[in-house]
Length: 449
Ligand SMILES: [Zn+2]
Image (tube, rainbow, N blue to C red):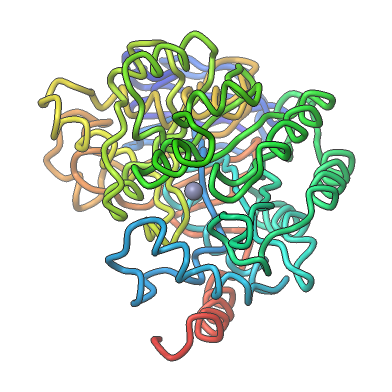
């Protein structure tokens, strides 16, 4: 496939635009990129990208797709994290296989339409009627055509032992580890530009016992899969760690053997200077979720300092009950503005948030073949139409995208396949899925809708 006549293309965040550019795709990878007239290619499909901004597809580094069924749930619209969780657990206990399938498709559709080509998910709700949640999510990703690196999440510390989740939502550690190994053996594909990879992700300090953290790390390292968890999200979590483990969250992580380069954490709001340095030295990456942190009033993550200390920072939309959207373009904008609130307007530039949404995300997921449009990289490409109403009158193309407010992607390509064309998903009947999703949400949330 040849994309020609591109108004502006950014090969890699931080680099200047290529104007009047072209891009050639072969076998799912980028075969050639340059400016001026394209060389003869014999391409069997040619896209004209006149008036378009072409970027590497975004990488979403933290999500809970199932929460698209519990968005804007009235009892938790103003609640802090711990109350929010306590009131949502009983709803999530109602999730079944159909709920996982529908919520995954809806969340992925939103992500794709906002220019995101790769996502992770952190699913940690498993019940007697829902043992195969990750398998179903993978089925949904294949159907919709998204690159997917789901985490097998887990909860093993219930209320009875001083944890936050109800006993009905925790699993035995033996069962968690067995299922984690099953998923790795069945789905994990270490090949470059693989469509599916697995990661392991015990949920948080207040829902998992230290033993499971240690055993999960051992298992992940046996197979070379990445590790993920929530960390330092709220002051309540910090208090919990001090009371239960006698140390702060980063010390806890270190004690468990998790302060390492195969780990990415979500949030990292409450980190002191010394902890930020330790994360940087250890090579731990971080999923920054500004909308969720603002929505729950959790706090402002020290993103400027983390980046200064060499921590790879990616962006995450976080679960749809705390965002309550899965729009990556909105997340770029929120990330930019939130740091400016504390550090002034030069704290981050639009190219910095592009870096976080592309290369930073790729580093979180351990995917060096993603996040830039160089020859040999995965052909995961987002095309935005600069002729749209809210970009009218804008000078800088990337500035238009981030500052003027989000629209949907015009064309989206994942591994060389066109998944979105003229703002429409090509792979699923979205109207049909939305109808079923709304019905399911009604059953789970009750009579609010
Ligand atoms: Zn989360």
